[in-house]
Amino acid sequence: MTNGLIGGEDHFRSALVHAVAALDSYVHGVVLDRAVDILMGRLKVAASSKVGLSFATIGQIMSAGPQGSVAIELAARTYVAERLGLETYQRPDDIASALAMVGITKIWSKSFPSDAHSQKTALGVVVSRRNRIVHQCDLDPLPGGTTTPMASTDALEAITTIEHIVTMLDQNC
Image (tube, rainbow, N blue to C red; front, top):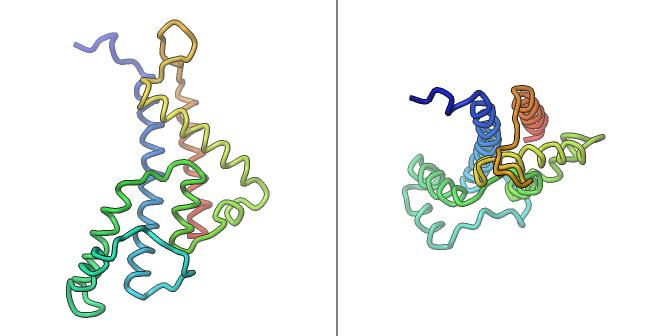
């Protein structure tokens, strides 16, 4: 039924999109874990750190059970995860802001002392292509209505870029 309708390029596009989603998920996980640690008093960070929970939400977390209980930690994890679900952490500046709000500052310069700018640019290119794929069907911006070509090497290069960035960021998280 799909003979001739689905080509290999669609798989390459999917791989690129999933690699960016994995990066986003990784950053969400780091922020969630550290935010819960902050709320539970296990991690001390600068007073300016914030995840944007309302006082009512903080009250619900604190009234979930006795101080330090598993019920409070589960409530904190639930509410913080719900709040973070409204954000995406894919672009370099968004990643830096997300990590800074839980006490990890200057992540790019710490992770890439000599080439932070080039790494951020490389990630920006991958994320822009991901956005074009998911929001514009990867249509070529030139007239003609065709999709932008994508080879397996394009997808592998994007995946390698993201893998390298996450590996280096993780050393400072």
